[in-house]
Image (cartoon, rainbow, N blue to C red; front, side, top):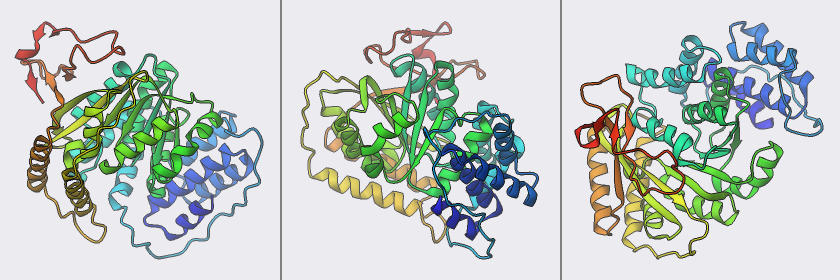
Length: 419
């Protein structure tokens, strides 16, 4: 609450300040300080009656449609922050515009409308967003609906950003009664994502934890228990820095947070890359590795990979040491990522540079004999309105009871178009 109070004073933009204060009201309600939450929401609506999320929260509290996550009220010291002029120097302009766009154009309470609105915001020229949209969204849907043990009860996500992927997965988890816990290091992104979740009507399915993954993971079982969620995951989605994937996965294994058959999915393992993660999944007896080769969202010239590993809890715990040359590859992936996240100016890596980088990383993988089984996103020819699908291998694992057969809508895989 103290962090949100400080953040709200600096106003990177009006919509971010609203997002922070809405998130503060959510947190006050969660810890049982309902009167403080109502008072904050009333103050927000006095300043701006168009605050859609504040309206929605006030209605939920008025009708008692809110479940606290603590057994007793906490004594929270909270005051409405005084408004000050100025700028933090942190540029959240694109995220501000996205949140405004979602609140103004998406259908309130319709998670799929919110997902579609976020994708269209990026595709229609408002600025590229690092989200798992397009073909990557098809893989995300399969993660929850088919690849994880069914029905999926718990998904863990690392890297929430603006709440796109968590909202998309929560849409499917609601059907199975499951829950999602997301970890995000940037507190502004946490506040924006929580507003997106609330507006989409999936806030009751999602818990967002703020902090570095290495600090959050040791406390996850306690956090999950406080929210009435299962203590081990059916699926995990990594979407943070790729050179952390393998160490975070080791920590999750050590904490007993993976169910047998857990589906572990990671984005951006080619662009910018996750060399040690791929090495581990390829050489560990505990994982059955498949990589989906596909186009980056809203950037058709760039190849990327999403890596899937199906966890076998009964397999031997063997770690094959990675060659030293992978350290150099990891350095290059982090360097490219840092250049693309330049806080002091425009992105230094354009689409052509990313396309070259992806091919260089693929060659580097080949040199150390990282040769994963590769699947693709396909679509039936002559039917542009048909849904894209992944040609998952038949031998993928025990989770997929309803495996994809060799034909889709009467069309053989060989006749389908890759996306």
